[in-house]
Image (cartoon, rainbow, N blue to C red):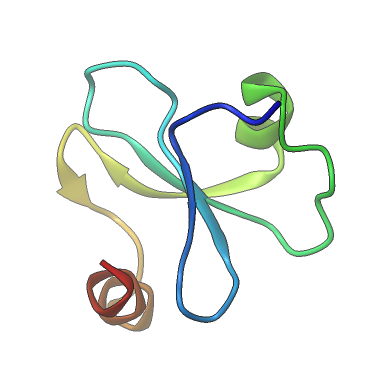
Length: 68
């Protein structure tokens, strides 16, 4: 069973938050198959937002906004 805070964007990229109310958002790296363990997801991901501030690149921001 996958955690509820995981979504897939229009390009099939897996995006999740860590379930904490801290404004963090992560993009799962390609090839990660295990999606039921937040610790493993976080370890194998690129952080897109920290403390409600976008830290990803511009393309990632556009892709994320368009996927919502």
